Length: 333
Image 1 (tube, rainbow, N blue to C red):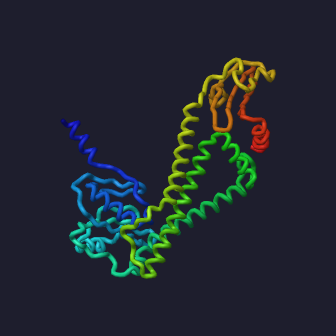
Image 2 (tube, helix red, strand yellow):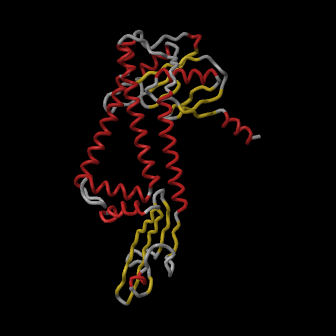
Image 3 (tube, rainbow, N blue to C red):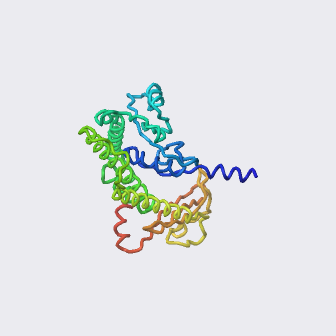
């Protein structure tokens, strides 16, 4: 009985992906539609909203944004929340600058603003948050360019050295590099789209056009692009996981079982031992990326008071053309 009760409680909660913060009308219509089905907003996160099952009700949702000063709390002032509650609104959830209020449709709670121009001014905090994000991004890019220009990497100093390092990483962990690239591209696209949409909403409000609380535009183009980028991120994340799970590390055999050399092949005689000072054993790691099969070996030989160490990274490509193109990368790095 207790187990069944726990299952019922868990079944009374669901999570759903909500529209972005910039989609004011879409969020309001989304939450109202869920309430009509008996799912009432309980908490809003960065990407998901949590709903609790209840009786279906006709609810009206309205969204308000806070406009905090620098280093101030992002929540709405308590006096403003109390005023809305006195007018019949209930604060259902909030995340960041967004605050979601609701009221039964039959209560006919008054709108927050009497004119569209007033609501446009209330979006100042949201617009500022997007421009702050762009400023932080530009600052990060500037720092990266300075590092690329003056801090040497495996491929040397300057843009050419960092380009060689990127090509090396692309061969070693192709799926992981592509995942990072798609993830960054998706973030840039979402931020650019949100900035443009917010600017367009503010412009229409300033022209005196009221906000559409039940928009019918499904934004199919945006959904397709966003879904495609998300799908690529998931695909490359799974391929990265496949490479990690397929990586094998074992003791270095007495006779090479791959396209790599041993110290004995180079005429270095002695007894295999662990690495001096660090104690690393003689091992070979075999992995496969989307571009090349790879063998990474380390071998340590002791001969009297002397010792030798041999490290190798061996790459086997699908075609000779790929191998020849990769040779300058190995020389540079």
